[in-house]
Length: 307
Image (spheres, helix red, strand yellow):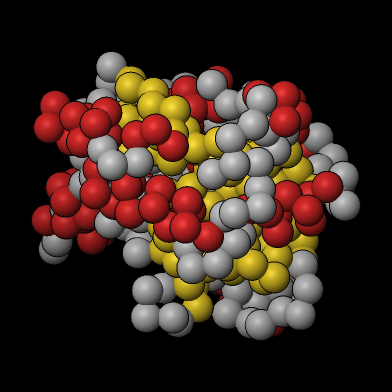
């Protein structure tokens, strides 16, 4: 890192940790190794981890290179990242998952791109799996057409950019993936940051929708890249049970109700209710989802399965 007075910090890189201190330190190490020309700060936010995990970050080998912020609770993705943003001094905010790592400079590239494109509020680079296969770095709004017909329908019939395609330059997208979101700080603050009512999933669709409603663009740029282990930072319980699907759908409905018409929300909710009602007759995981849908309330926050 290039230490500098707070008023010269260009990018604040915020990494959220929850009981995965080794992943977090590996991520920090990769950034320190490749980013040599950028004035940046690292902010590690612990989201209510166990004591032994907390101690690793408080006393770890790279401790002098990052600001450490410890939350007293696991408030979820939005809560933890907002806490990190509160301590940030940079003109740009990079929110990255702790199961990401870097093999070449990335943040400096995105900072230069954003500096030359004032209409862009958030961007993301190319995402790779550890085996060097590409992963989608952006997605399409999950509205009625996507819900009933899928992404291929949107791409082939309505001309949406193909998530698996190779692009020569940057493109405007509906929303970028939440594992790496690079914001202009003024825009992040303008839209009110992440919604802390969303514990997990769909935070990126929500904030990109609000950002676009304010006239800013969400952009994917393949000129830089990063690696994502994918779901390594999600707890075992939510990955291996019906709780994960229930959490996803609960957050999805919350975002739909918040940002879209009551008609769209009602149609999709009814379709989900009917589908999981039938599936619950035969599958135990589907019963978990169906019970969650029965409990759904429009004004409620996402179900906090990890608490």
